[in-house]
Image (cartoon, rainbow, N blue to C red; front, top):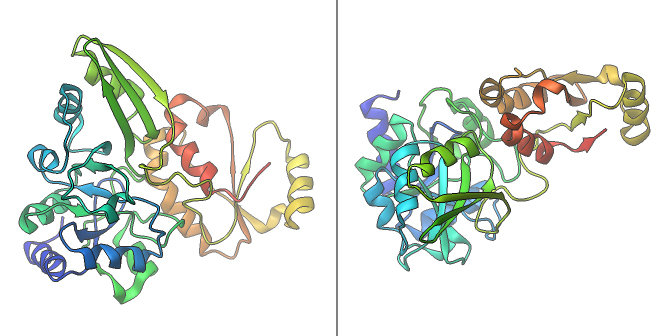
Amino acid sequence: MASKGDIQKAVQFLQQGGVVGLPTETVYGLAADVRSLEALKHVFAVKERPFFDPLIVHCSSIEQVKEQVVVWTPAHQKLAETLWPGPLTMIIPKKSSVSDLITSGLAKVGLRIPRHPDALAVIEQLGSPVAAPSANKFGKTSPTEAQHVRDEFGAVVHVLDGGRCEVGIESTVLELEESHDCVHVKILRPGMIQEDEIRSALLTMGKKIEVEYSTSQAAPGQLAAHYQPSIPLVVWQKESSPEKFEEALFAELGFKGSEGVEMLLSPQASLAARELYSQLRQHSKSSARFIYFRETDGNLDESWRPLWNRLNRAASFRF
């Protein structure tokens, strides 16, 4: 945890319209006070983020979340009470007071309550939610340590060092539609809060639960190429033999297998998520020309869905 003095300094930067590299349990965010249009513009400029990609608003309480929206159903309340603070973002119709810059002109806003004590302390002391996309250049690998943010932006961004991120990948993003007998859940971006936890929380309402996986412009991280390291990431599908992989690698990219470095992740999804971005950044600094990752039976079960979402978007090629 950061010291009280460091937290106060981060709050002062935000109050002055600055942006702060803010630790959360998922990844470090590039935070700006939602009340400052100039600060929000600064986030897009520093991150080199296109204005069509919306930001997620981070709050410190359910009451603060409800102040941002015009719809709040029993299903929203149930998920909020059960899974917040935590790595879950809900997309909800917004009040007009929420800047269209945050939502890319859309009528809905993504909101969550982070589980990191430093993030909560900053938001509480600021007295306002913050908009906080991941603290990296647009489309590149997300940061999970304070040094990653410093490496990305140097002195341009004030960084609050809250240690290493506990979860390691971005939040689950979903939308809810509720009727008198059914809750329909659209998972727009998979994360480490997965379908079984969402179902379990909602089942206590006594309604039918329907879950689908979908995409929406209202959710960030939807581009085909995202989270990419600074050297190519190649996914080696388990059906390909080493010989076929070597042949395809040279034919398509001109690389030899010996010029690559293998990324090894735990078969346990929660541990793999904690290591994914850190390893991508570490290997990018090596002398290797590319990174490769092998599919195995151990990393193809349902718990790996959010990791494959990131790997497939980060990969330059799949063989």
